[in-house]
Structures are given as C-alpha cells and as structure tokens.
Image 1 (tube, rainbow, N blue to C red):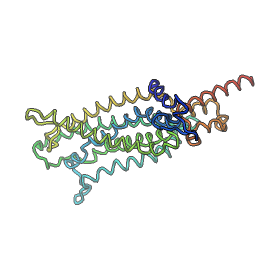
Image 2 (cartoon, rainbow, N blue to C red):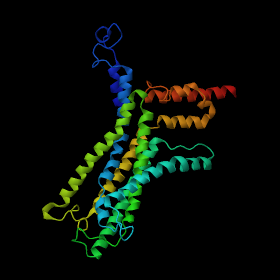
Image 3 (cartoon, helix red, strand yellow):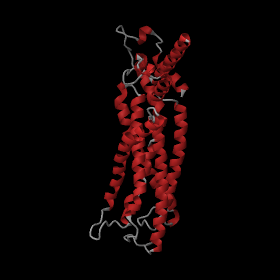
Image 4 (cartoon, rainbow, N blue to C red):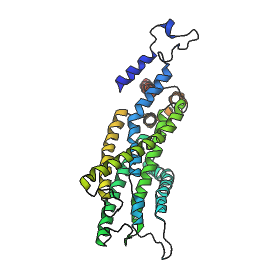
Length: 336
C-alpha cells in the first residue's frame, strides 16, 4: 500500500515549471500534474477499497437466501381462517433492523457506558466486522434449519410434493430473519459512518455511493455463485442442489457453502482491518481517553476532525494527531 501511495505522489511533482504551470498557478495539463488535494482524495479511495470489498458478502448472504420458498412449505396460519402470505414474513427482517437501531442507541450503549463509568463507543470499522460475524451466524442458522425442515418433509412424505405444507410453524424462520436484519443494520450503518469519517467533506458524495455500489456488486456475485453451484451440482443429469422442488433439492448444502465463503470473508476482513490501521475516530478516542478534557477543548484536535477540515488527508490527520499527542506529553514533562 505504501508503494502505491508513493507512486501516486509522483503526480504532484512539477518537472518543468514553465511547461506544467500556467501564469495563474494552475496546471496547464491536468493529466500531467495534479494538485495535492486530488492525489490525497484518490489515496483515500484506494485505502478503503479492501475494507469496502468485505461488505459485498452482506448482499451475497441476503441474495442467496430462500426464505420465501421455505415459508411456502411451512404452516403460516395465525388462526384457522387467517394465513400470512409467504412474502410478508420477510417483514421480520425489517422490524429486526429497526429494533436493533433503537436498542443499540438507547439501551446497549448507555448501559455499557454506565457499567464502565465512561462513554463507550464502538468504532465504525469494528461494527463492520461484527456485522460480518452476525451474517455468518445467520447462514449457519439457515443451513441448520433447512436441514431439519427437509428431513421433516421427507418424513411426512412430501419429497416429491412441491405444494405440501409441513406441520411446522413458519415462525421457525424468525431466528435467521432476525439475524439477517441485525447483521444488515450493524454492518450497513458501520460502513456509512466509516466512509464519512475517513473521507474529507469534499468526498461526501463518494462516501454516500460506496454502500450502494457494494450492494450492486454483491447482487452480481450472488447471481454468479448461484448459477455456478447449480451448474456444477447438476452435471451428468443428476439432481442438483438447487431445484424447483425445495424438498428434493439440497438448499442446506448451498447455505453451508455460502457460510464457508462468509467465514473466509471474515478472515479477509481481519487482515484488511489490521493492514488499514487505526481510523481517525479511533485515534481521537485514544487521545481523548489519555488526556481527558484537555484534548476535547483543544482547537488543534478540531483541525484534524473531518467535520472541520475537508482538505486534510487521512495520512496527514494521523500525523497531526501523533504530533499533538507528543506535544502534550512534552508539556506534561515540563510541568513536572
């Protein structure tokens, strides 16, 4: 990564002042000489791409689920005369997202702060990882449930019956739907906060679009994985894992494959997170904890906050924070 950044820095080098710079101070050929701000903005994008790519898995685990097919094979009656439509069960995931956001902001964080005796905040980067972990647990739950559901369908004689309804409540889908919603809430919000924190204000539009871009790429990857598994498992005229008959197919094995990919993605996230290093908010929090209100009241700290300074790159922010921290230590030693 450092090699790439040093390579990009060469775009700011003025080799011939007369040929590269106009009398008004601007570049004659913007493709030959770039401003420092332009290079730093590009470096900020390059720096977050590895962590951004880990979020593709969030769309893959949602796009690769078959909750609707599972719901159609289960008992959806609330009363003897009212049956919940299979598609309406997906609202459980939406409710889980809403409830998690409320509980996180109003209950979990205040309670943790009260227990520790100081403000508690989970950084955006860590929340991205927690969301990936929950999505992995959701896939494991879905695979386990589908295995149980299929065994029950075979036991009740519905192996070749695509319209058979099992004597099993559709509410058994609630755990995997809730986990899916919680994973989406934790990772999605964490991603947005991460991009807005790490990018300068001038790149707010880029920060807003990265989440949607990840979802789009994730849906494409989900379709590719789906088609690949279907073609590979149905070679030589065999019944593949993915068939029109959910009882005859092996959707549980499909879930296990996606869960394995999710586990690898989680390891990939840990590597990317380690390589990325501390974020701006993590550094600010560390200095605040060490120096207390002295750091919070300092105007120098505000100058490295992306909300106040939209032209300072991520690397220069970290440098300023380090210099400021060292200055505080020298001041304390002088007083002693």
